[in-house]
Length: 280
Image (cartoon, rainbow, N blue to C red; front, side, top):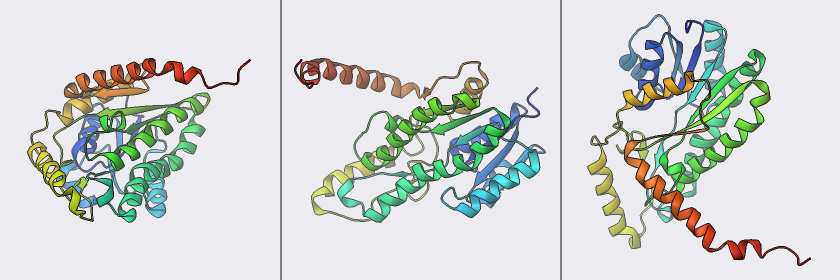
């Protein structure tokens, strides 16, 4: 029975997060939908007897502690944590202030670590748990304008891979969800996407081209958040979930090419790689 399973979902008020909340509720789970904007979450999710909506800024210690306490007061346990909250700082590195870069890393990486740190003791006490971290295809391969965003997602990929090793003995699994382009507000400026706060003259043409790409993409992404959520729940329920779940039909060819190219590069320079030890 699913009635006792509890899912804690960050960024649960919109986009992929809201889709996962609805799918989890539809599967009979108890769900905590955590969001910075509670009013938005209530409007999007409505009322459900198995739903608890809590305020959560994942970079705020007080919010994190209060949200976890509220979840435990209501449901007594947390079985699945979906680390979905975050945003994309997209553009060119030289046009980003150090403050904006630090905010990106603080949110996507350290915020995810912060809420995970608060929930892991609960899962260790239970002797079971599962943590999903929403990465991106930009956590696999960088694209134009993604250098800082990819830095935050690449860091999450390494962290999750290590955590999946370290937490196995406690009965806790970790998984990376790597979505491609889904029809959410991610490509909408000042929603889930932020643009650089500086302008450098040499980037004028590249900046305009990138802005046009985002404008064209917004609202036209091929990915369906509801289908993503359906697939995610199916995988989490399975007996042997993968470490990484690439979930984007359109990204599959690009990711395949990327790995083939990377391996070919490794093979090409292997002689230099192996010729690095002391002579025996």
